[in-house]
Length: 421
Image (cartoon, rainbow, N blue to C red; front, side, top):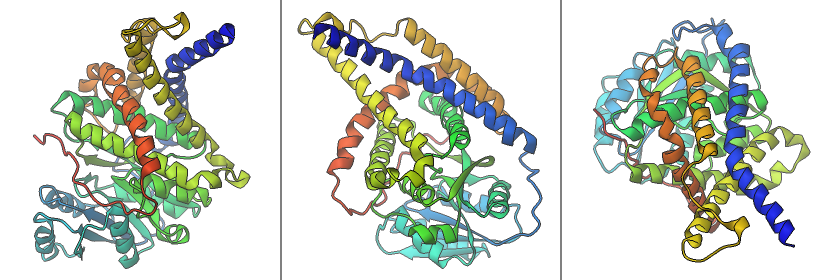
């Protein structure tokens, strides 16, 4: 019996140490395949997208809740879009600040802008659905109310929708605007070396876990087929991604479709954001579990395995932290003893791998973000700062998802926008 426990314990510790190492090289391999197969042939200039034989109309949807400080800049950049036929629909979702007044003033100055006012906070999913139903075009581009959209982003995303009728959505390439603090600088590396590489790899290996909530385009008929966005999912972007793909629509990643967004730069704001992501991911998993068992939907298996393994790893790391804490008070059997939480040779190996991963992503993404090199040093802190936050938010988020009342509407909460200077 003791030998069996020792074997299980050994496997447990080896899994927690080597899982992130394995995933890092899996993502890097997939990203390289994506880069040489799809990305490099399109060139390195954002303002040279593939030509379109026709220019179908596009509706740009901008859901807003208390975005008075950012919405003027967001709309002003939408006026610069390099696309001949588009409209802008801004949804003021029960804002308690001056967002509504600002949008009404802008509507009098911006010919393409229409404003929809909701009396009470209905949630982003509800706002997007109402805007999509009122949109006059088949192709939709959805951005957040604090986003600066690159003028060529619409063209890049529409190209996928026009050339492939099975594409239901295209996720863009969000970049971090605020980089004044350590957390902001680390997130620059995260969005490139983690999120960017993952999306490239997932595109190669089958399915994408989620479109970006900050910038994505959709085929309206695809949304109609799946019933639009779920109002009871706290992460509507993950939910709509799974709904589309479980109904056999394809999702593409387009790194040329850039936008610039604000991210939390305080630990409190970062915790709240990552807790929302963790809870939302588990809500979507519970909501779609039975569908994932259907053999016809087997292309989602890679996404499912990757997600569940990451959750198991997070709880494994939590258990290790608890074993260490308990070991400070009582003597544990040798096979359960965690002598230190400080990184040993495995930590050094992970740190070096993290630098290699960011170095690779910096080479790939240099065409989109010329200032990434300035943040290269800071990414070494990613495993320490962000892995710990992600581990504990998953540990808390899973039970929150389990205990959430079924059908409860997810409404807006104003996020931390960081230090804007």
